[in-house]
Image (tube, rainbow, N blue to C red; front, side, top):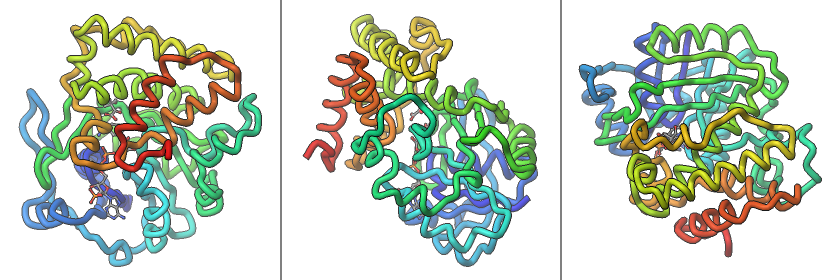
Length: 326
Ligand SMILES: NC(=O)C1=CN([C@@H]2O[C@H](COP(=O)(O)OP(=O)(O)OC[C@H]3O[C@@H](n4cnc5c(N)ncnc54)[C@H](OP(=O)(O)O)[C@@H]3O)[C@@H](O)[C@H]2O)C=CC1
Ligand SMILES: CC(C)(CO)C(=O)C(=O)O
């Protein structure tokens, strides 16, 4: 199976290595010093307690040199998505499936939910309607990635949660293309706990509890996830935000069975530098539009009170380089 990872940074680089190990014919689109390192030495995965693992694979910043693929994985940050959707054009054949390994809500997330028509929410999830126009949703499989990673040096991915390398894949309609089943089999052989699910919105919502409830608090405090969960005050804030998002979920038909105490248990929290904080440290804008800001908007239009979430979102937005509050 021909798989191209578009944006082989922390998550995409990790996926490229495991999918290649699982038997996929994998290529990567990347750029800059990361690309130079991968061309020279291959892509390496490091994780505590495991031998480093390195693969050599075709790496380019010119997708048109790779030709049509069976599956294209998009693993860029939200603000790079519009450009990525244009750039993947030469990788798309008649049956190509797109798998999004991105955090947050895809543009179709609110469709069918009992939420009032909300322009501000649409502008956050699908600015100008561009995503919905470019990709038919039946070709788009959302992949919820529960796995902490960072590019620790060019061409090297450090996996900070080796016991939580989980992928959950699903579509807006609940049905899926046979290529996705093949993709999941390769991911499993490569070492992921991977599954197709029929309730992808619930999975996305559960992941938002982590990103908006824990990662954002860790980011505004510039701490690891473990540090936030080990400090009773910041842990209480995280639990409060998670509970508010769970209440919002119940109000809009997305109840999830989560235990905020267990999610923030100090003894199991990983020493992960969240991908938000990786961006903050690198002076990049924070990926807040289709996650934390969209949640605030949903809460407003549904009449659900989320004061802690709003406060954390305001600080995240203020800390993001290109402020979305302007
Ligand atoms: N890191 C983590 O632990 C987790 C992240 N996620 C999600 O995964 C997604 C990806 O995040 P993450 O891997 O951390 O991000 P990274 O920034 O590490 O990786 C994205 C990569 O895509 C590259 N890229 C973007 N646009 C292009 C382009 N047009 N051409 C070539 N390369 C491009 C970037 O290059 P450049 O740096 O030059 O822009 C970067 O190397 C996000 O939605 C994130 O929220 C989900 C779970 C965990
Ligand atoms: C915290 C984590 C690893 C959760 O899987 C994440 O999604 C991120 O860092 O963006």
